[in-house]
Length: 124
Figure 1: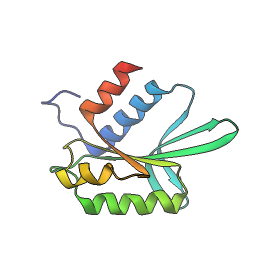
Figure 2: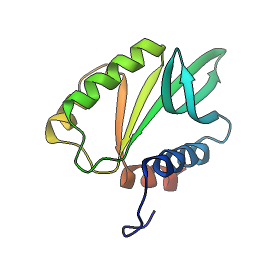
Figure 3: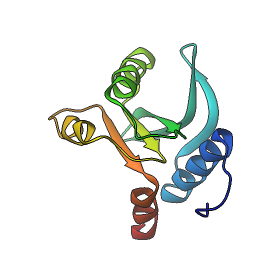
Figure 4: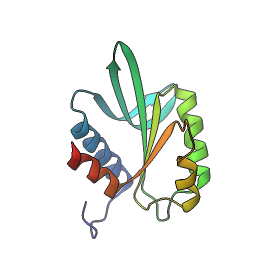
């Protein structure tokens, strides 16, 4: 994903799915899945100590940084589908208020930008 490359939202979703497959090759990572009647960009299913976990990822390719309303809507989807955790990956970063909101205790989501994802992949 070069800076000059013209990327569409579907390619971005597929890119995010590939990254998570690299991070955990033992997890079941799927692109464009329906969960409880909701379309989810990427799902990660994994069994840990006998417990089935579901992580959902929404990949957002926007012209501007993500707003609080996007996070609020995403939190609702996480609860609706019964996900263990939600991950929002965005290409344009986060508004300052979101960075503070993410630091709340017991947050059921994580927010990542592309540089942070690349850093995670390099660590693994």
